Image (cartoon, rainbow, N blue to C red):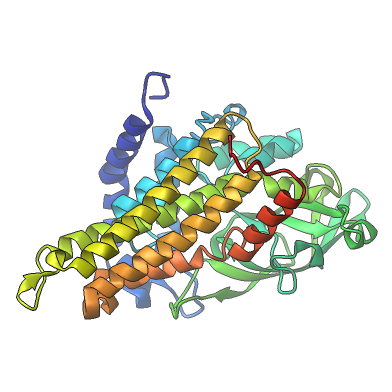
Length: 411
């Protein structure tokens, strides 16, 4: 399957065939537990245990089929297939399967925050031997704990701390907006280990592997958005959480270096899902305007509607070309932090505008629950904040320009 002669499109086609053969039936078997929000989430906002188990089964099935870790380092049993295909896979998933966003298909590729990605190259041999086999098999689900109530975009405001106690570490603090935490098996936690270095903004933060079964760890509450009855994000507390020294990941006080390892993949995945979502919305809109009539003519025959379509297609084309260019450079081993910020900024903005216009073209039906366009709009809007807000992207781009690190020829 991973022979050099196999094209990206063939791999994507194989992925889609796998999804339709094994994942969609697994999802369908959940019945109303999956489709009815009142059953999907419990009274605390946490997902039904059957859905958590179905996600695990989807990951494990994907691992057995050779897909789950195909973007992970080869030393962890992956195929390290590259950034371009990573982007194309996420775009294809959201284009083909659309809404709702919590479908099982979106859990069949290992994500940097939850699976065996680059950060694990910095784990101790003992910890890697303990965790990686199960992680690569899809048996475990992790989460990424960086954001705090008073440390959102500015991570230097972090207050969660870890203090040595013999060979162990004692962790105290809180995390917020930690995706996947209500059902996670472990958290890759970032905590202050040197207050002076942190105050000088020269390090002082370290990364720890923390099983969620550790005494003192607690999911205080599930955060919900867009008026939903539940969600995947949690507020977490750590009260005298004790972990052994082997659970320190990477160099002491250099945790931010590890936190940035997944930024490239995370932001390009965001670009892929927003573009894919917008393409899904466009497909629905094209079907709709070819049958819906107003004032004696099909919507497709109104020049205003045609102008909307042309503008939308132009934005999606521009965003896709930007993303593919950044992915190509990343696969060449080039530093693409600026390009990825530009891609994330442009694609999230463009996709939101396109989905919003698709809703407008649908008129009242665009607001109806059955079209799921409102979910697409939520999805597109949410990515203005996740993986670094759009304002953070603007800040990073401008800073790199002022440092002379941006070649405006973009060679």
